[in-house]
Image 1 (cartoon, rainbow, N blue to C red):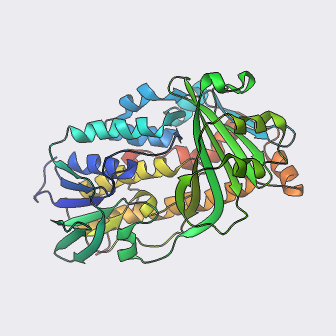
Image 2: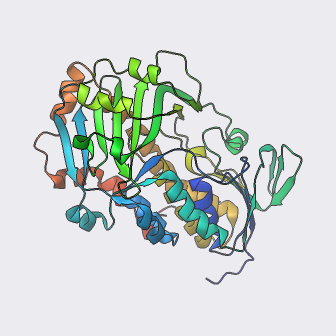
Image 3: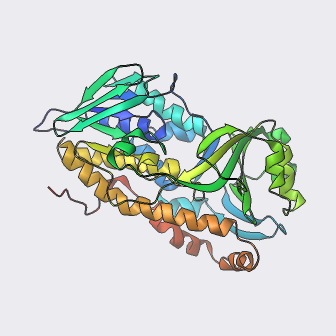
Length: 404
């Protein structure tokens, strides 16, 4: 691209999937990046994640789509089962017709494989510098640039800053200062060898077993050699956002009313990781001058639509497109990026909350949920998710234009 301005320097706070993707999107335009990661090493914790067609559209735009495809499992369908009586609630094929409709597949991947594919591309880029053990403790954001000071006293200066630092974002605390909404929903995640999965549950599909105030999810990873297992329940305790080691006894105590067929999965993991989840109420703005937010720092969401990583990837591509469209005027670019993302990401956050209610329905609400999709054709399912999966990089800015 040609530009009338010199590319700016940018601080990216956070080296997760969103931070890595943003680094790649901006560096490919010639932007010089200092990436600050509070951990001692660059990496991802967690297990599996789901990648819709919108995620692959973003990954292709970043130049890493093929690398991610090589480590992904392409699923045959999306399934919801009733965990009380084992009836099938819905089964949506995601094969040839789905790919033709949305121009990309539906797949599942180990979180570390997705992060690693983006990280490999980032490591090759000379404009990106990594700084680990760089926990930001102080920020100065002014019209002429930004300064970040880490806990160990290092100072970093740049023309702009992007907070990619998750639910507990220090950049968001500076820009907005709101509190996370602790959901009370607890998520346990584990990976088990395929040989330890019950034979009749080794499906090539993300499967949701929807139960009263709880659900289970399983799907294959790494060419079917492993299975990702996720269980979620409404905690009886007052929760605080965070990650810790899990307790099998705690998990079992929340699945008393669940049929033995899905419940047997709870005995398979040898260890669990426990997430007490949180999101935030959507906001109308998340940028201020040369500072903006991305991914969970901008719009943290729960897991019920499997879109957290997908939204961060969309954010990164949109941010790059806005910087290019605004010819490196970062304040204008951040406004344009924000205007393109606010309503879409808020719709996802709110839809996720409603999907959580459907997953965990009980009593009459469970019966209503089970009737919602009876007899629905694949095309009707595709129509319902068109707004989510049909996102494309070439139209990601929409009609948004910077207001000065």
